[in-house]
Image 1: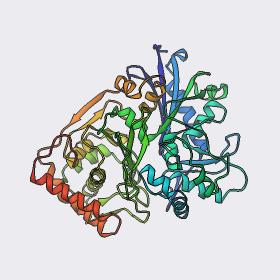
Image 2: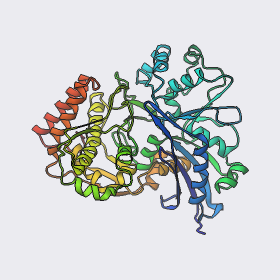
Image 3: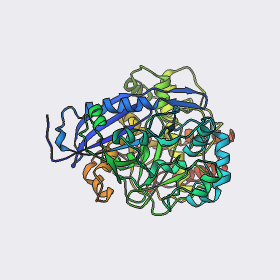
Image 4: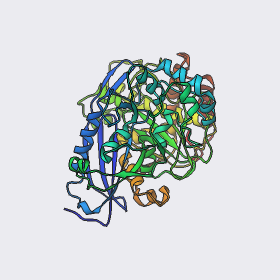
Length: 500
């Protein structure tokens, strides 16, 4: 068993698995564990069993701590998928399935939330709720449940099991539930107008705030020593931002996991009239603008299950650009860089060549990533800093290079590109600036420059922009801005520090 001066535990609740890392003050991972998660998808429905979240967390923690001396564990923090919620009773027992971040059944409830909270949403910059957000889903669940209930975000459910009692939620996870991030409080008038019963919502704290200690029952289940501090976590996208160490104004982190999440840093709140971009509050006080797309690597897990993806990467490199054009949605409906619940994925011009179809999917995700930056630039968000690539997709060296080529600028790949590291950064942050802790814990593994002929992807990108606009999903101003930026870049060399 290995001893260290101090070890911090980060728990990442993802879509397909729970990942846990034990990290030293210098960022060295001395223990790791993971357990799979399963769910149910059908049309706009996506549910998971909350009890499975806890069982997987307990087993992954025990694995991560197998060779770590118990006396060295200082604190634990949890991040989870943004907008995932469940109703529980007062004891924390789930009363409903967990409605996942991309469950889009609450369309009517989103309209109700917008009617009641229009002034608040306008002030917070996103202007309207999306059906996949937590507040519409809370209303949807309350309409179908009889009797008292409490809301728990995914991280709240696990934190309650760790603590053995009710715990506050963090402002990061509470954003999509309607928390007023400027006042750091629930908008009582809005919740009253929507009929949310008193006592349904948890207390609010900033990420990085101590919220309890690990209880005896949780210690026995997880291997985390009893009395270990529990620190308020955040969403998986914000945790990935911390784990990437990209915390200066204008820097961005692109998390390519099951879905694609972009998160940047700004001193000012970014306002999006189209409702696709929202801004979390950083633990140190800045704003973290960004959004979550419904495209991502989950398409590969679905359509190429059991295949050797590294071998397919090698074949895809011969199809640049691909003949087919893909809009690879993991589930129905899009959330960023535009909102379109009716959006459906497509593959146009397929010739039956598997390698070309696979290449089209990789390129399609990269095109959406580029469109995200074009939309952010349209809104005036600062985009001139570093771009880091994290998430499971960052393990593919080929896909990282492809994304650098499509973006037309350098990208960095952190040594340990995962949200669990960001959760560990939060666990180590009380009493310090989170940016300082991240600077000590996060190392860069590689910097990837775009190739000399990266512009060969411009036509494919503009084809996708045109198709998305033609189908009525992409707003005309965003499409026009994407074309204008591409034309500008074609007319002049790419300016270093400005993503296309």
